[in-house]
Structure formats: structure tokens, C-alpha cells
Length: 278
Image (cartoon, rainbow, N blue to C red):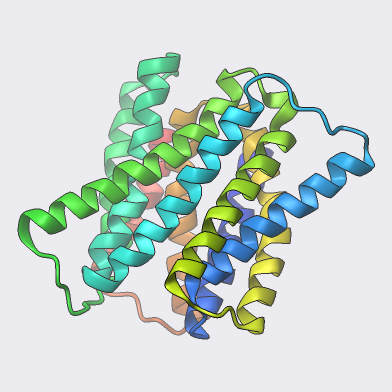
């Protein structure tokens, strides 16, 4: 379980660094793109230095698909944040943990006890309660908004599922190759997006993205090692709830963001859900 604990801490830090960029007003696609390119370069350099530049069967396919899903999911969420309610978008993004859990049970026969299923339902409720309810000028409402939020949830869930598939494709020993290709694919798509948007990257945003990428390379390695040892039906609910719980507590005590009553209730439900899932 120490790998799971380390994954939670690293993913929590990853979220805080991106929040730092958001507070400083950096253009998110630039930070995200620099992050993924740094992941690719750092891991690729390691593979070259250690003479491990070989790509077993299915690594290329898995890396390309995962990279595309990663960057498109992030870009979709950032687009949605400009036209829909912030709280609803973030809720949809976080509830996406249900997708890899479903595929884990349906495709790979991962265990899911009744108590864990109850814990997962409580986890979904807690994620909604702990999501900020800040409002924006929403242009999408009704059925269109529901469709957009559903797409965000499913697409991010596919990202998680693709990462989970590394273990079931027998690529545990080649996860570095998968991550390098994932970062390269996501980074190149991100560059094309920035060029199409005609947004000039600022040096501070690039610097932060490079720093996050170096950090993220280590975090993704730990997460894939953890997924090779634990079922997704345990990993994703625990990871999702723990990171959001820590994020809310850190926001309250460090960022000085006051927790409302719903968020406090979500914290309590999260603790109960984690006890049931674990």
C-alpha cells in the first residue's frame, strides 16, 4: 500500500502546481504542453543513456492512444471551463473515475465487493460535494450542457482506462517507453493547438510547465507501478477521493479558500468511502 500512498501524495502535488499556474494567469494549454514535452524528453533521455531504446509490441499503439486521450481531455476541460459552470465541469472531470472501474470489472474481472461498491457511490457523492460551486457566465445550458459534461466525464475516464490497460497488455516492464510516447504525442498535439490558437507562449508559463513535467515524469512512473500491483477498483476511487480531499484541505489552510458546508460534508463522506473501499 506504500505505492498507493506515494501515488496520492505525488498526484496531489501535481494538482497544486497547476493551481499555481492558474492563479498566476498562465495560459493552461502552454503549461500542459510544456509538461508533456518535458515528460517525453526526460524519459527519452533516460532510455537512451541506459541503452533501453527498444519498444516492445503494442507500446507504440498504447503510447499514441494514451497521449491523444490525455491532451484532448485536458483541452476539452479547459474549453468547457470557458462556457459552462466551473463546479459542474470539475465534477464531471473528477467523477470520471467510474469509467476505469467499470472497464476493470467488465473487461479484466477486477474484484469489486459490495462494500467497495457502496464506498464508490459515496466517493462519487463526496466528489460532487467537494467540487467548488463557483459560477461563470455559462453559455451552455440544458441538454447541450449535459452532453458536454457527459463527454468530459467519459473522455477523461478513457484516459484513466488507457493508462490502466498498460498492465493488462503485459507492458509493465515497458511502461517507460509507453510514458515517453504518451508525452511526445500529447506534447506535439498541444503545440499544434497553440499554433492554431495563435497564442504566443510566455516564458514563465513554459518554465512552470517544464518544472511540472519533470515532476510528472516521476509521478506517472509511480502511478503505473502502483497500477501493476493493485486493482483499478481500489486504486481509482482511493486516488480520486484522497487527492480531492487533500486539495480541499490545502485550499482551506494554505490558499485561504473557505470550505462551505457542502464541502465539509464531502470531507466526512470521503473518509467513510475510503474506509469502505480499502
